[in-house]
Amino acid sequence: MPPVVPAPTVAADDARAFEAENVHGVYDAIASHFSSTRYKPWPIIADFMGSLAAGSVGLDSGCGNGKYLALGAPDALTIGLDRSVNLLHIARNAGEHPRDVVLADALDDCWRPGAFDHAISIACLHHLATPERRRLAVEERPLPLFRVYIHPEHSVTVPPPRCVADAWTSFNLRLGN
Image 1 (cartoon, rainbow, N blue to C red):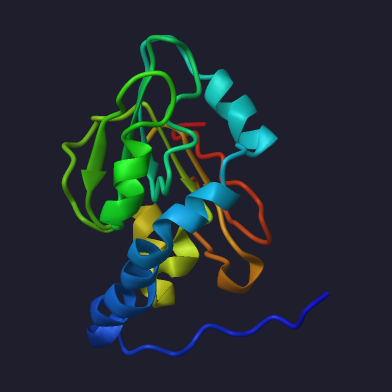
Image 2: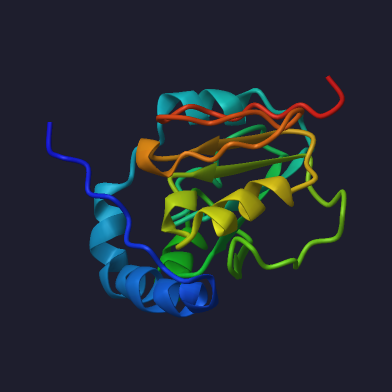
């Protein structure tokens, strides 16, 4: 197993600039190749999406090429959010018909409370430059069900009832339970 390389330390006031250069710029440059290597949905996420109620509305925060946008009930809607314009061009055409996608940062407060029944964020939070930004991306999502997968070196601890995440562990956040 290759050694784990720790994430660089970034000052909070430089986090957005660091992400713009080292994450968003890179993904825009490699979008086509990246998408060609990320075409198969993870079974556990496909199962989760398939378990959602008919007519549900959701968010894929950090949707990349949109491979999860077409999953779920036929009348369910999952909106894709990403910071890579080039990946969003690919995501818009995921599945059999055009998808709804939005260019935004995972921390942008661009949704009204209660807009979504569910959300997913798959292998995305580790791209946020600071632990505080990673925590905010989870804590500030008032959703009834939110599933997050993260890399082990970027674990996020969120106080109950939200849950705790560790190495590729999902958050199953059912508020009120």
